[in-house]
Length: 138
Image (cartoon, rainbow, N blue to C red):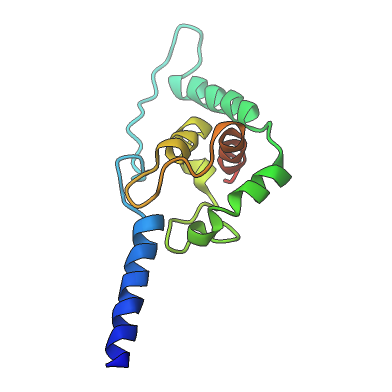
């Protein structure tokens, strides 16, 4: 009888952990590896993809202003699901999240959550700082 209760309690604890931290739901936000961008020549002699690359470089420079030590300390509330070294666990790995998502997209996920991930664990400047730090993880 004790074994049944222990098994039932273990299953319940695992379900609770997965519900709180979630798994990696493959939403439309994920990169499928296809490149639908077409290169078109503009009047200035540059291509649209060159302009997009310049915009991404400018965006990355803007995202680079953060306090890494404070971000790492704040991230500890996320490490239970995403791993202490961003390697993933119950939640997806974040070691290269900056190559997949922008700072604004990461901030939106932190603020609003996702299926399996609670919203608002970090707020305000703390959320902004962690989002900028994660956006730099490529």
